[in-house]
Length: 261
Image 1: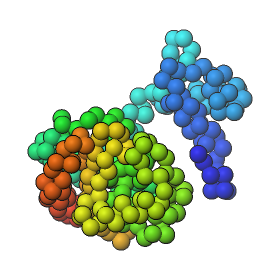
Image 2: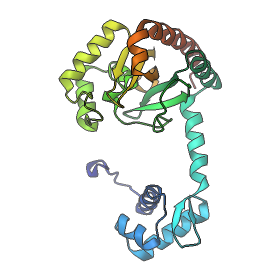
Image 3: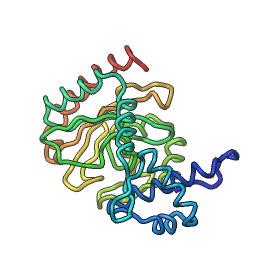
């Protein structure tokens, strides 16, 4: 949801409308006609037609034989560029893959992007339940994931309160913490433990653990490392998981501090 109070005074309407069109098409995997796009974006058919033609010319949407439009391959190219930019040095990906191969668990790198907690890199492990949405760029449910908790724990209480007020505390499962007070107590327990965790708070039967890689003063340079696993694994092997996470985090810190760009 866009904040109307944050709208820039020099907003270029045509660009804004084109992005709305692209978002509408992206949310409709079966495709949309120009009239459907216009209705969803609250635009005239004539304006929508010109915007769609431009996006099709640039490769961001594709017109199918039935007259509907779907997202184009240029979107995939931009996503690949996003993944590379978020991940950082190639050695980051290599380190994550080694950790995933060693433990069998999917590993994630997380950081603040703008003011939101986001996954910046990942490497799949065969023992972790598959979670399709946990890809670079994912920025939902910081209060319900260990990665998000590890980053939120680096904020001051006032900063956390403002974050939660802005982005909310959606209940993903019956175990999700949905009050700031409950989250504060959970983060304190994580600090004492030396590892933030969640068990079934984002997905039933799935657990996640996370540690800090770089506790930088600059918000957007703070990095955390997380791994996901069946809930029973975390309950049985929490100390081993923490030890392996901390070891991998030290290796990642060396890589990122040697190549901060």
